[in-house]
Length: 358
Image 1 (tube, rainbow, N blue to C red):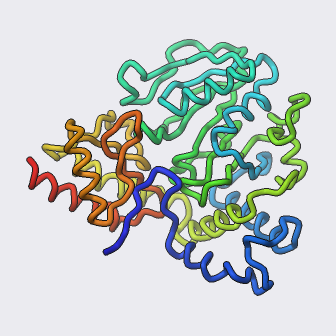
Image 2 (image 1 turned 45 degrees about the vertical axis):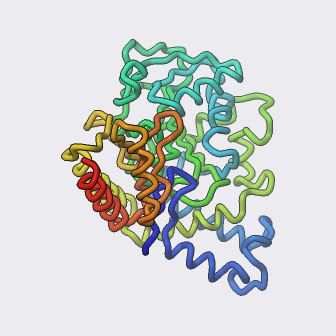
Image 3 (image 1 turned 135 degrees about the vertical axis):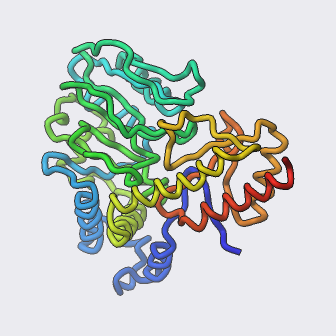
């Protein structure tokens, strides 16, 4: 029985990448040393990190005036790093409140004495749609924080808000490399790797050069300029996670790049949404135009029935479908490495469950 992992993160990785890692694990590039034990100062690893950066630049068409940084600490640490590095003029940022992770970003910014102005929120409708900017933009805003994909609520932004000269900072953790964006539309992009790019432990930061280097006396591990100057080698980077992410980036290229992957992701999501929309038992609460292609929440409206759906799915090899603890129900995460066959298997199972219970 095939196993399909619908976890929201850490998440499914491409099978060819796992096979590559397995084959190379005892002796990386015939060095006699495992990738788990090579020095981050070695020529072997320098090639790994340089290739990963170049492949990412190729895939996202990253302009030359943007720096690519390899961090640790997840997207959550960037909720602190972004205001410390970028909110240096007025210590004031704008926030689009699209759900749990946007709120967390605002909370962390306030912890480092940054004023946060909520420019729009969809809290009143339980985040079943994306917020819009509901007020004129204050020129003292250092940047505007946007969560491009809301992992818990199941919404995704493709039409970016007009922010004029105010930089847009994007937490792309859950649709990084799963949806196409133009890098030059953003001042800063960051993403935890553990959803679409690799194992937990690596965070990617893509930042416009002119925005960094203005902060004074930052803690070294949060300093974008320092990491840029040191080529992400200020301290030991997450060697294995960067290696694994590099393999995923090469796999993405082999799949046809970002445009091909985005098209595949839209097709996978459409298969599941089309079923949910015609179902008499299951519903997806999200406004159709704002739906995520990465994370699809759905419910029966009955907690006991939801539990039965999840238990039965596991017996059919459909794993990790339990919704986030804050919203309940089910959630299917359809990241890049989830094959169409996995989504079809889920739809077939849900249809059979509905036939039995409705």
